[in-house]
Amino acid sequence: MIEIEAVLANLPSNAQKSIVSTIFMPTLFKTLGFNETTIFPNYNTECGYVDFALRPHQDNEIFLQTGTNPSVLVEISGRNINLREGTAQYKTVVSQLKTYLLSPKCKSATWGIITNSCHLQLFRKHGKVIHPATQCLEISNNNINDIVNIIRQKIHSPSTALTVAIYNNKGGVGKTTTTVNLAAVLTAWGKRVLVVDFDPNQKDLTSCLGVSLGQNTFYELLEDKKNLIPLEKVIKPYTIRFKRKKTLTFDVIPCDEKLETQKEHEYLQIFKINRLKQILDKLKPNYDYILIDSPPNWRFFSISATTAADVVLIPTKHNDIFSLKNAANTIKQYIPEVQEFKKDGTPIALPIFWNGEKATAAAKEQARKAIDIIIEQAKKDNPPFDLLPYFYSRYTRDSQNRYIFELPSYANIANATFSQIPAVYRDKIACDYYLALVKEYFLQ
Image 1 (cartoon, helix red, strand yellow):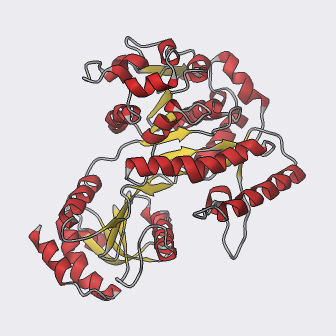
Image 2 (cartoon, helix red, strand yellow):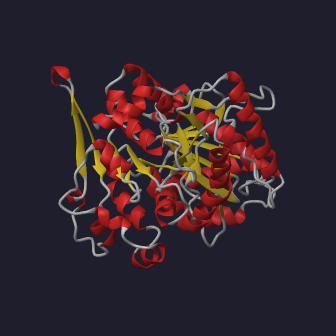
Image 3 (cartoon, helix red, strand yellow):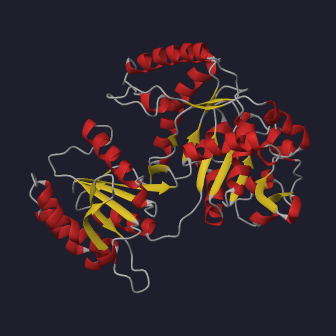
């Protein structure tokens, strides 16, 4: 890859976008494994023109001629644009790239790249979720080869599961119910799903599904540093049979008694924080979604679950100010701690939602006023933190839309735990509710 080093070294320090596009990008694309026929410049996404779309060869079809089913979208800037993570210019470029990736014409796209030849970042799209696949990396002659190697390996690898931690530092917000029914509706939608019960103090997920332990326990798997235990001996299928002989199955890693016997400092001595991530990363190629039911605290199990995750889904209650404040703390404090540890930009927080409480218009407005205060307080933090997109995901300067997704209260959802059958498999209204949740956050 000496060629890309030479091109980077000779690029003017004030190179405009056109110079970056014509001099740096062809060599970068070539190094990433693309040639002239797999690169489509100025690609019309139908939500605007992205600078480049890429797609490896498929059969005898030439992407430059057809322009169909792009795999990678690339948005570039001149060197005068500051793409250092967190800057206003960075946020603008990332927002634009996400708009392109979510356009109806680009459903096939699974990767996005931003670069100005000084910085480069790779994003992954899984359904509707877009999250960093790398940090925003500063490019130099000393590291360009390593950076390109990492990105090339990622974009040419088979797609793997999106790992989701369902978490709020506040208990009683419906994390387990959300996890179970989310798994059930995704399975009904044809997705391969693994559910992980990582709340040993409660073990509610294991209990509410009536899942027995496998040949080996979850504790034994975590303890197995030599990888002697086959993963399939810990995983148990949950299968529901309907009329007309239809069946649906998702997999479960159940929680066992031994996981709750240790004290916090003992866990930290026995297991590394990234041990769960190591296990689940091996399982990612087998699934579309891995969902982790996490306990309501910021200790070993919740930190491990968040470390294993690509994204964090945060249930809240509109009538519980502590669930809203704890959601804010999770977003501005806990998740950044994990991002700093992982060094890959993940996990990211998905916008909050209100979960399973009856709410009048007046009560919801009162909750929004409380949220407005939380958002304003976060702006005064040192450093300031912008919570707005995590609470009001559709808010813009023009619309000022204070929409928050709401999963309505419904008795049959809670009562389904007694039958050990997810509510979405018993009741059409419950199914519609959770299908709306899935479409809001996950399915494009």
